[in-house]
Image 1 (cartoon, rainbow, N blue to C red):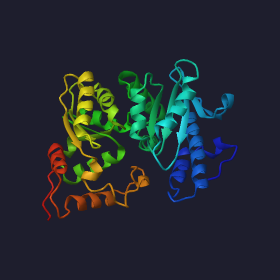
Image 2 (cartoon, rainbow, N blue to C red):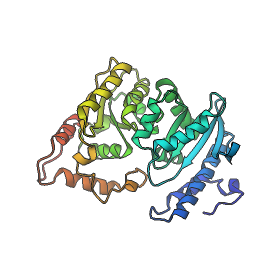
Image 3 (cartoon, helix red, strand yellow):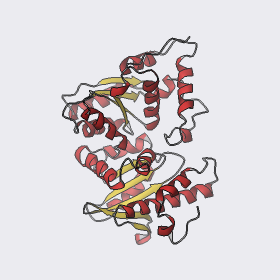
Image 4 (tube, rainbow, N blue to C red):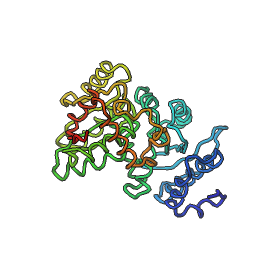
Length: 342
């Protein structure tokens, strides 16, 4: 869809415009992908305008380009939107942070990346002296497009979590947990690092889990964000769910567990989580890390084929060798009962 000066008229139905943009083939040329990124800016402005948040389209103060701004709950927020093939690194977030920090004290940034963020990018924000931005990934955006959340409600949820616990990335998928708890179901709250991990664990639970109706999987974005995310999530419940932490060891499983455990103990001293540190990664333990079927562009829930993922997870689990120790522990922790088809 070409961009015209009269974008408000063109993007009145911003959901249809988003569907058109999302239909772009991942193998499209760079020019088409750049145009899709510009479309996303206009779609977001139309979305924000519909919500009455008084957005301003892309502008250039003092030579720097800002994708837009909007007004919510008495404050102005700056907007940056990206639709790239790869997750956004820390360097890109720092560039946007410089724009935000150079404005009036109290200005906050919303960084939207359809491809998500690298774990070191989220960790860098958690470790920073001041948190001046919140993050939204493609799954969050899809939840707004699908009508699960209004954009104003989505931003409020993220702002509150950031203010109360210091987490820059608080996924909108957490809302389903509160609904299950309200229905009287004691929950296992399973925290994982990324969206791809979330889909792997969810696939396992849905296929062979014995407690699927009371298990909720939430990605935190990076190792340093486990504790802030857990604090933000658990603050919503009168009766705390059972907490399960699944993290990549990255060659240093003991150090990783100690780091996350200490962070959680400092913030949530009364919580006794279960830990599963999979070394070096969850993907490698399940035999998925080197598969050509899962390039980075296919590791986002927006494009991930459920049947293909289940097929490959099943094949790796039932490969004709003994299951790795980490996989057996994973099954025990999650209550997964895999039939012996071998």
